Image (cartoon, rainbow, N blue to C red; front, side, top):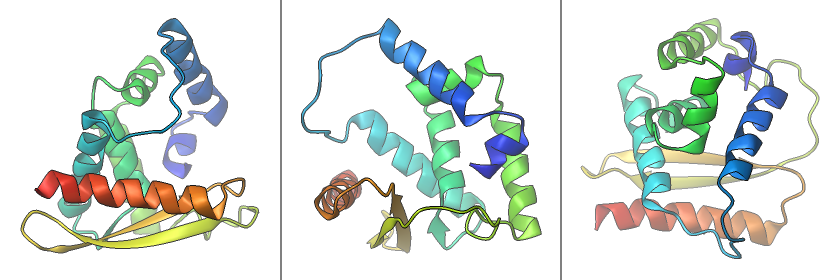
Length: 159
């Protein structure tokens, strides 16, 4: 993500920190990923962040902030270990938004990717859009399953 890179945090460093935490706390292999309360909370926090900046949709920056706000999560712990502060991330995201920079227009060559567009609503019925971009190695079925789980998690939160 551009904001983290601009803050001097390399993808490899984040990956190494996350892998170290996962190896330090090995769990059982999960066949089916089920949205946990923590995952639902990250999505809720991302929605709140999008509302905070008056955005029409939830972007990767909002998800990053959501991950960082869910303080007990592996991502937040790894970023704290790398001295990434949420205020710095928010400031960099705002700077990138003001400059009109998005990952799609930075000129980065990328392989073909799969995407899904979800139209949802928050607790008050206000429309929310989520655009999900998947790595090129994901199958159509995997994309559909993940999109379905996200939609179910959000709808379950409102029940």
